[in-house]
Figure 1 (cartoon, rainbow, N blue to C red):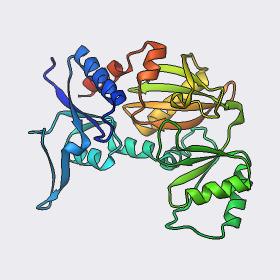
Figure 2 (tube, rainbow, N blue to C red; figure 1 turned 90 degrees about the vertical axis):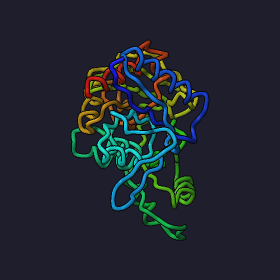
Figure 3 (cartoon, rainbow, N blue to C red; figure 1 turned 60 degrees about the vertical axis):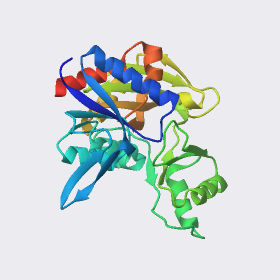
Figure 4 (cartoon, one colour; figure 1 turned 135 degrees about the vertical axis):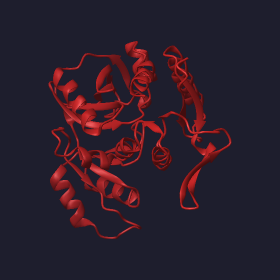
Length: 296
């Protein structure tokens, strides 16, 4: 071993077989590059402020780790660790931007990243009766069909397609107190996208995802992934996203505006790696753990 041991933090509510398989894969990959990883669930740690100072306590840790591989979205915990001097992969800033789809597009705007036209829904605390003018402006800007996305969500499960005013109004009321956005529908990319995995600003694996039954290509929604060599423009756009965010690793999803033109769909700071490893044969977990060693 290198003598370096860090924590692998995952969410305490996700002790499923799928997550435990992922944890095991990362630990094996770390062992291959002589790096130690100790599994820590986020709810095993107690963070706060005491006597005017930050503190971190818990059942397991006796001292702070050299680093944390943070496969969770508990931004406050990531921030606390960083403020206590721990190197966190990815950083709290990257996790926060990527976890909120609206923040992702706001942050990347003006940085040469081609993105769908997007409207961020206003913050509301309860239902409102009349929003005709607002809905009119949304449909004028985006047209139909349009995509509605909750700002927080995974696996495409909080992404919807609306095709007319009635559906838009219904979805608006359903999500009125939920952070969400409205987005241009990219018809050419129906049921098709590219996942590009980047580690240390290098592309390590790419796959094409397709679905015959859904406008979303997510594998969890029935999509199929295959190894794929994307056009150069797609690779360059993904690298620009990674550089703009300053991320350690990312799963970047790109749509086809046409066969040669990429347009950003979303960015994942802790994308699952099982599917892309299975279809490409690339050990993404080992790429990530090797990157960690290089950064320490």
